[in-house]
Image 1 (cartoon, rainbow, N blue to C red):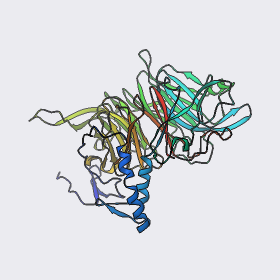
Image 2 (cartoon, one colour):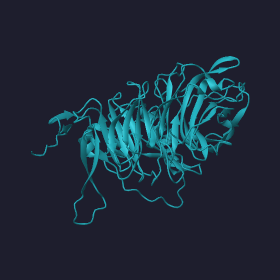
Image 3 (tube, rainbow, N blue to C red):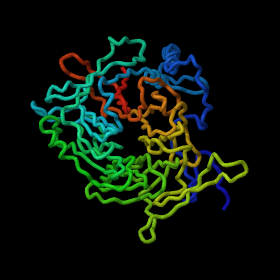
Length: 507
């Protein structure tokens, strides 16, 4: 069969033997990775901030002359408002919570729930954290625990202020994090993943109390495998004397004889999608029935649900990203999964040898939609425009892909990430303009998703910032005790490591 010709503005689907138009602009102008340049010894972590600040006067002048029209710079048209967003993103304020350096965070989510107190119900921001020692805990955010009988209180210290136009005294003070007594429960093994259910997601509709369920998994240990759990938030949480009523809502849905690395909450089918050292499976959250859709010898380290739950992305230890489409149920023989041989190109073959290798897996997958990154997949993030997703691997690669153009490679690259063996979570802000990630050099970096530009890079932690989550809504969670803490409506992100808890916001 002759090879399909490339037509401008169209892509070819070999299975359907048809050309389809490429709709919408690809977010990002760079199609090939740039050659990284070694930073000079004099260059500090705030160099990105200084470069962006140097544009300010030019942008102000252009705005006065041209209003909000697009201006040309370096053969690239840029919107003034977008440029100022980048400058603002490069000037965060970083807070560290004093005394939280021993909790060992492995997963976390921020949510807004109704909390039952002695004085009635109160809508409260809560941080749900999972630790490396297996502890699952609730902490009240932005208040001082006045409704509870004792607990641990962690005060926020401003450790970095990158907005040179403001002094520390002028900055908004951040409220403490308070963990009531008995608000932590020890599970059988490390908490490997926490995911929020419907109406708990950071992309849920704002303005109403957060209700629903949260899903979390335990990793497993040498003596037992991991498990899938849910906990309900429909009824108000009681974090005081009635804490046992709160923990009674925790339900073990299914247990396994394998390691559970990751999970996703499939809202539409009310099921969990899990990634293990044996492959990928879906778990019905009502019946606990498990259905395997992928068997392979390579661990599933990362997953993402796209296209309203119809498509599952699985990132493997061997660097492959496999696409499972539940809409394309293939006929099976004797109920067994179909075996596939997936080709990939090896970069370490000897000169003169074949550069084609293969790996086997079983599942309801589309082999032509399988791609491979240079190393083990660390994190996957699907964007709201579900044609695009971000992927990072354990060689420091970070890329943006288009589902329609997978075989052509990434459509954007993000330089500077440092990783060799650690599972580090990427974080995307609610506006989906920026992506951030910690690195093995203990630095945090933030990029523009569209342009791939590195906007922020600095070290303020002594350990790898491997967990990140944004606030669930834009409402304030700053403490309201009299006037000690002021109102804050900025977007913020929680950053967790094995040795600390941080919060980053933009004033």
